[in-house]
Length: 110
Length: 111
Image (cartoon, rainbow over all chains, first blue to last red; front, side, top):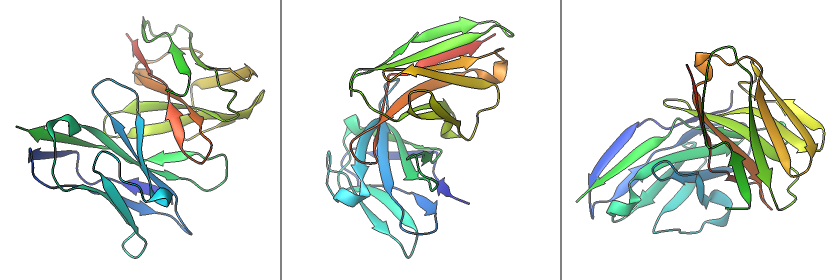
């Protein structure tokens, strides 16, 4: 079965600390993965896509096929990073349907 | 915001009443999606569309129907709302790659 697992419901850190939001996936073949961010009561925004290997707002994510992981990292958390983060996988069967993890709430304290 | 709007933004309705949510896009995207967002579940796909009058079911389609009579509008209908359909509903479109862009959401409460 295709699945995305985000094991932490809440990650609480202090400003300036490193952050790692975990994402594990189950998929046969080459996965296509995304990270989305949702600030309080706003729409989801695309943060990263694995194929572009870009860094947005200081966040990076590396696909590890051996560990079936796509963890999101930032070396120094800022208070404005506080938000809900979702990992998503493009499912098989066409039509670009996304499978989301349950999400992790990141709380950055001053 | 990829030109996506949703209406209404908030709605309170009673159990058993029909409800229609509208998603409108201005950039002629072919693929459109409806998701519901619930704590502990993330977002789950309800229905999707790959063209005018071309729609199909997603993971949690029971109790929902959709229609797409023109490219820019994708309607989600709850034929007879139940309390389990209290949720935040997001519409999305497919971008130029495989990414999706989301609307602002509709917060629906069924009493």
